[in-house]
Image 1: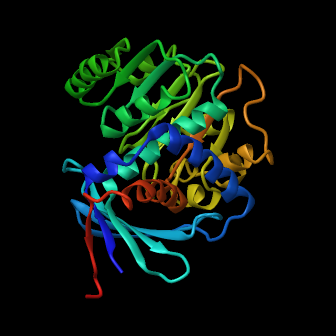
Image 2: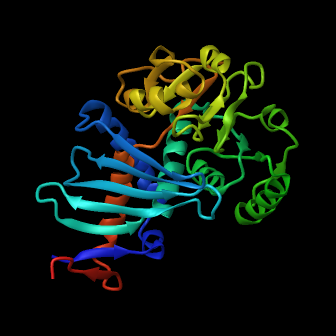
Length: 320
């Protein structure tokens, strides 16, 4: 059989964010109701500059395929993450496609962030703070506009020049008022939605820094040793996550030295009606995401549906 080989340009061409958002919403609900396999990660440091990461198995009821993602993670390089997602037939194991994982991971993470904000942030939320001005920040902002009408963005990065460049570039790209902030405190002081996407290993959001009724989506703590949210903030707010066990092992609770008792619900449980989400306008909600294999599957299957009918896509028979 032939396997599709999808470059980044192929993934971009066959990815539609609004459709993926709808598919991801249903996927979180399906995972909460019928989780088919526990997500696994295997990480191996290579040296002080990089590590190898495998995320598997991506499975979900209703999709007759599974994914295995293989990443090289080198924070000092651009892009920091390079790798492939392998899409296999669930019944036979046949390799249906291999695709560049960089854009796929970035967009599905942006969509998950937007989904969390749509479920947990106030309906009138319009002011955004971005902590970290990297590639994921732009994807989060673009995705967030799918679910909320935004009117102002403040951006903080430890590299002020990068925050300035990001603000200028995204203003021209989105025609959305933006300005760099001199500190985390300044960035979040009037924010309704806060997005953190940093490599920080020390908490920088603490009690008293956030407005009542605000929502935080925290993406940086996705492996052991990383932290963005303080223990005090987690205790004083309502914390939601994508997966309990992985968050306790390597997510925001782990970074703050806390356990499963701090977790109110998984996002899928809220979408399935099993747990409550935001219950009042003054509540501070937090969503911590480590990234799950089924999210890769939803995105990869989405791309595959369009690409398999594209005659310009490269194909190879590995069994030849």
